[in-house]
Image 1 (cartoon, rainbow, N blue to C red):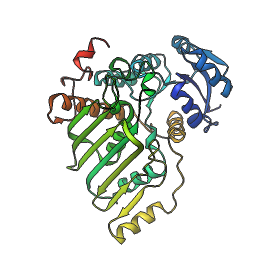
Image 2 (cartoon, rainbow, N blue to C red; image 1 turned 120 degrees about the horizontal axis):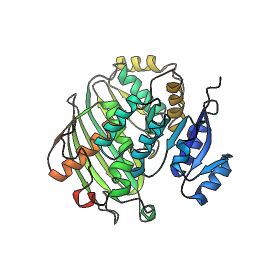
Image 3 (cartoon, rainbow, N blue to C red; image 1 turned 45 degrees about the vertical axis):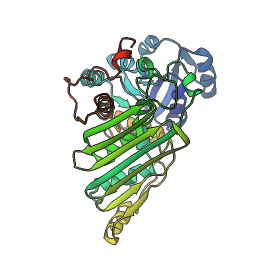
Image 4 (cartoon, helix red, strand yellow; image 1 turned 90 degrees about the vertical axis):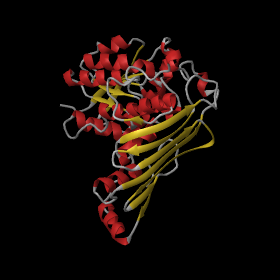
Length: 362
């Protein structure tokens, strides 16, 4: 019996990247057999390019296809929640782009649905994969790095009027947020992935670069459960584009490659505090096997999870942690106060972080 899983991609924008990076690179694991997009003129050349014969405009039609194993949701953010729930209820495995959903209430509903569904759900956090990020993770998990001290994340990107000419971008009802939600969420996930859970956050958001509803500049100061400290800065008004992560631990300091959209790929700068620590790191990494970055490895590990060889590489609980951070960020910016995590159902933004003046439009 073949272990190749059939895939239907919903939305061919970022969906094309999933094909190129995640599925073509894993031909023994996946076969994309359906594309679904409302824009037939955009869908047709992509379907032609990759020889995908089935092209539909109806999501319900895809749900009814018995020969589809995985539904890969690459639509605008406001559509994620209903599509994820419908796909899980239809018994499909699900991959979904970030943000997984639009509130903590929705992510908790997704987690509850997963428990009674046949299919597995994997949110997309493709920046977690690659030699740089995984070597740092291995050193930390081995206990070599020691106590975390401080960490910084800088997301300095560029987006202008052309980017926001796409109708659903820049609006609370459809994009669900700005640089914090759509751009920096990956890097902030890497921060918690390596440094640990956040205890308190003091944040600010502002719209200074573009004429849009959502924010395009943010900054925050964080206290972690471990006692370590952190800072986040992000803007869409940078003259050039870099992503920079730097983490100082008791025994090691790590700094990422500055590649904006693939900070996990190239080997990071690893600065051991002393020769003894260097020897431990050298021993740990001496037989290191190359890890392809981004979607190639995330999709391959999803297949391992579906075939019982491994745990899910990214879970809905990971998405909840990311969305909890987003919720706390918006709450702190509104109240000008620290916000303590975790956030429960009685939090004022549990049902939505969208500002009140826009909430009626969503």
